[in-house]
Image (tube, rainbow, N blue to C red; front, side, top):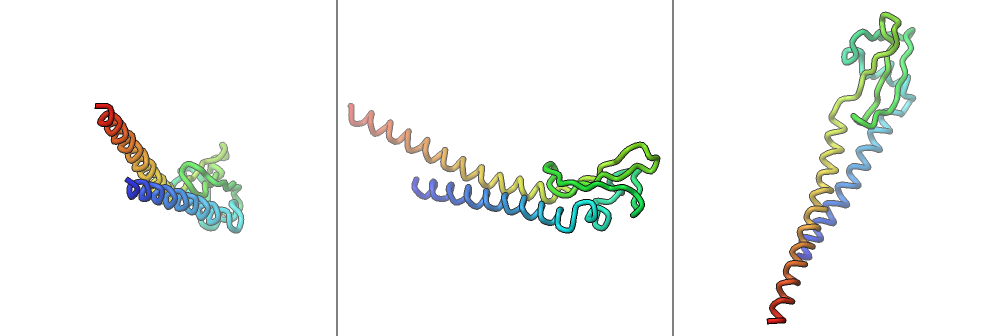
Length: 130
């Protein structure tokens, strides 16, 4: 039972640290050099945003997206009727979710270990009474 608890705590620590690192790296890579500039140079491109114009003369606004993790770009529409958003790919978000799942499995292991300990303690108390 001590082993289950140790593994659970380790999984929580590893999962949380890895998830924080994924978010930090996603934010740093999205914002390094400026969001608007990175949208013009690296995208996400208008292929994922129909009706958008990709040119240096066009207004583009970059931002950090929390769902899906990464850089999102708002491209000016070709018809001048507002903006079209091109979002980041799912790779970083899926990596973050896997890290969160690892931490969740650790929490589940701790909960299962605690439940076993309580049930064994209850059985032991009942045995002493009889």
